[in-house]
Amino acid sequence: MSLIVQKYGGTSVGTPERIVEVAGRILRTHQEGSQVVAVLSAMSGVTDNLIKLARQVAPHPAEREVDVLLATGEQTTIALTAMAINGLGGRAVSLTGRQAGIITDGVHTKAKISTITPKRIHTLLDAGHIVIVAGFQGETLEGVITTLGRGGSDLTAIALAASIKADLCQIFTDVDGVYTCDPRIVKSARKIPEISYDEMLEMASLGSKVMQSRSVEFAKKFGVIFEVRSSFNDQPGTIVKEETAGMEKVVIRGVSLDRRQAKVTISGVPDKPGIASRIFNEIAAINVNVDMIVQNVSAAGSTDVSFTTLADELPKIEKHLGPIASEIGAKGFAAQGGIAKLSVVGIGMRSHSGVAAKMFELLGKAGINIQMITTSEIKISVIIDEAQIDEGANIVHTGFGLGSLE
Ligand code: ADP
Ligand code: ASP
Ligand code: MG
Image (cartoon, rainbow, N blue to C red; front, top):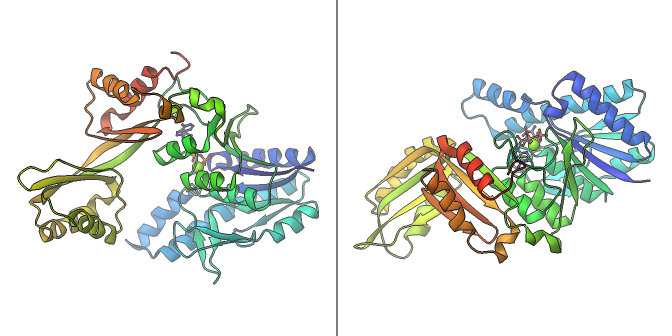
């Protein structure tokens, strides 16, 4: 008998009707002769609403309590889904993250799974039950509730699949699979039948939020092959797996975009050893995550250092960066939101040259100004004006011949 882990995201369980449909799908899989563990997200919009609610009672709510609150979203869905399955004549039992054996560290709102002891899951499966697990949550060894970061139900599903050695891990969502770009933005985007972990990881961390990037990292580490597919139809989706020989033939696998970025430039920074370390240590100390960093060539003993971060961090930067800049003897700083990151990803770039030149040419011809550039072996990212990001994504996608209409 095969053992299947299925994960259903927020839109897939967004209404009571959708929950009943998902319950039917889970039950059918069970009736076809498989043992089923289903991981569920909160109904769409619920997590966002809970976060808003928390801010209405306190401007900076304690993260411990935020986790207690957010974990209720998934608990609602697992109870409703188990009820729906039982109503359809099946036998389902819901489990919280902890009941499913998920233990995490204590880093609230972005906890890491430390161990999974799926004893209870196995006992229930062996007794013929369908097991419904709350995604996105766990507990510390001391019994404090934690959550796994936004989109964390993907991680719950992949980690459980690894732990119970599932034969199949299916991520059901509101699109038919992983596309060459977000199909809501690029209409000609195509479904990718197979993608390597490295490409999926880059795309996810560069803004293609169809999968949580940490969950892909986990899948790569433990060799969990998974499929991203639609909960609205029966079309085959996208298989995410280790790279195979043919994959390198495709130069660009996909285009990713990430909005709401901000650029900060510290000007007149003394060009001496140890200064970069001081700047970025101070920035880390105020808990701002930095993405791209660019340092200009020095002129007359001083230089400019720019970095990007999320636009949400701007208030913190404006408050703290002034003193940091004057402490290191810099002239000053300027912070600016309204920018976005556009990236092309593909393992084929390792063996093909000219990709960067082509991307820059495509953007240049369209009059889109590039403000910053970073590259790695399998990606090229540029920062452009946020107002031009959809146009940029479409131009680059078409220019590299990725679309169905090209
Ligand atoms: P779920 O609630 O099922 O976890 P998400 O909203 O997290 O679903 O992820 C699915 C969404 O990801 C899609 O609706 C789509 O707009 C977006 N998305 C972004 N990039 C891509 C991509 N390259 N391929 C498919 N979907 C993408
Ligand atoms: N409900 C959580 C979120 O919205 C986790 C998830 O859906 O995967 O981020
Ligand atoms: Mg998601």
